[in-house]
Amino acid sequence: MTLKIPRYDINREPFMTQTPDFNRKSQLLQTERTYKARINAAIQLTPEEKLFQIQILDPKERAQFSCLPGQFVMVELPGCGEIAISISGSCSNHEFIEICIRKVGKVTGMIHRLEAGAMVGIRGPFGTHFPMREMNGSNVLLIAGGLGIVPLRSSIYWVNEHRPDYKDVTILYGARTPKLLLFDYQYEEWRKVFNLTMHTIVEEPDENWTGPVGLITQLFDQVPIDPDDTFAIVCGPPVMFKFVCDHLSALGLPMQRMFVSLERRMHCGMGKCCRCNVGSTFTCLDGPVFDYWSVMNLQEAI
Image 1 (cartoon, rainbow, N blue to C red):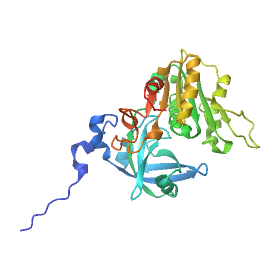
Image 2 (image 1 turned 60 degrees about the horizontal axis):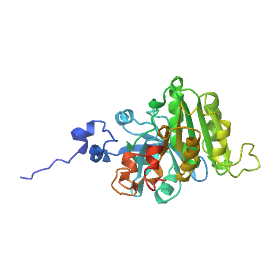
Image 3 (image 1 turned 45 degrees about the vertical axis):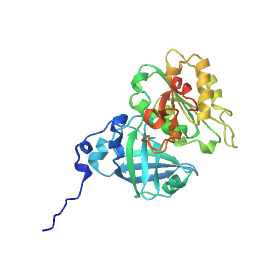
Image 4 (image 1 turned 180 degrees about the vertical axis):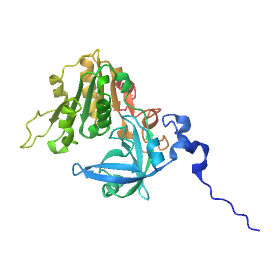
């Protein structure tokens, strides 16, 4: 008599039918669940950046997926690897997830070659988020440099979807050249439809650029800031954090009301590879969003 052992199905395990709390270290072993997903659209924004709209295949899992501004997902290309990428779309959109990827290495280069219809894996969402609800009733200052507009974009959607909850909302965005300004096709919508104030600046203008030229800190001269009633979110290259946040501190804005994202340090997203640790802090587990006071006390964080 042959004993037939049934195939093990992890999806029948009790924890697989529940939505795990991805921010709790005690449940990290449960976050290895991968959602099968399809790329619905791949839009070339610049020669190096591409915007992907990704849809989780299973309708139940798609509806269950929930995120907050500032969180990230692990995007897996089977046979190639996976990367940590910030969610760049609206967190209230359960039809698809938007991510913007810069081509900088093997995995990102392979993902850039994908077109609509290609299959990928999604894990997450992971990490801490920007405390948008704590900002209710206050002014919000959104500051981005270069690729930093990508994680900030989810906060822009959040503000629009909850616009009565906030006072004045201002976006300051800088890039090296005008051609590197991302999502420029949405700026007028953000100003007129979302009712946000937006200022842009570049370091190296071209013949068609008519806006200001210089570093992003120069835009502060155009924005009245009430330090007693303002929150700030800063996203961009780490070298930018110090100059921007120190400038805000000089204006009287408390460090506990400035928030930065250290997503660029992450690799596995689960604290296993130790590539993102700063001292005893793992930015993928304890971050990637930190208030600036905490970052100042993390040696070599920026």
